[in-house]
Length: 79
Image (cartoon, rainbow, N blue to C red; front, side):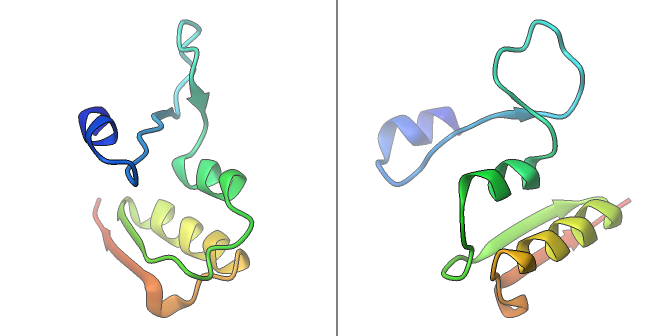
């Protein structure tokens, strides 16, 4: 992903770590919270998500609060 961001102006690689890693200097927390922090509205976006059913449900609910239409949320929940 980092290489893609170096090769394409419209691709941005921003790693987010959910665990407590004292040595990590980047962003921490849930990935979908980082998206929520970075965008005022998701109205004009398509979101593709995969992960646990709990994560998918939480992110879908939160993204809809940022004006994402349910028709633009695509997911694959797995356990």
